[in-house]
Length: 140
Image 1 (cartoon, rainbow, N blue to C red):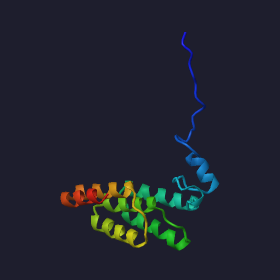
Image 2: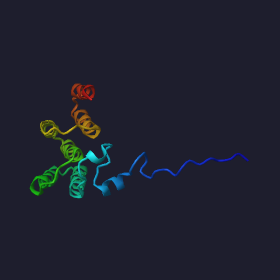
Image 3: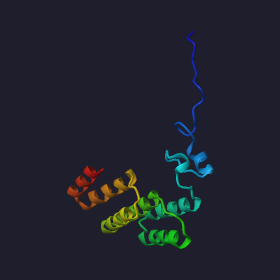
Image 4: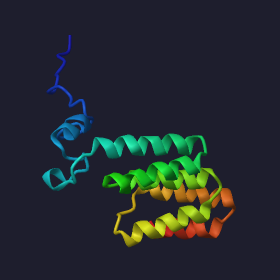
């Protein structure tokens, strides 16, 4: 019978280093930047989840109201917060609002990620703006 070799147990986080959960508990965001990562904020995550839920049900007004809580409470929104709000704009048929939010993100120096580009591509596709979608792909 062939011998079966087992490597060390797998990391439950799916990769090297800390899992996402343990990174949150230690205060670092699991972003690959280690100790220099911004502090994890449970409040920001909870508000972002609310915005994402409102986006799913096309409740743009409620998503915007929730986004305003960030400023009132002094909570720092993440790129995922902006992406969720952008998705609310797109799902509600307001591509212009999503593009204005994009400009605001750029002015604030927020680094765009794949979720932002995906939402914008979806918006341009729904709007029939194929040339703009192609330009966005080229910009990625």
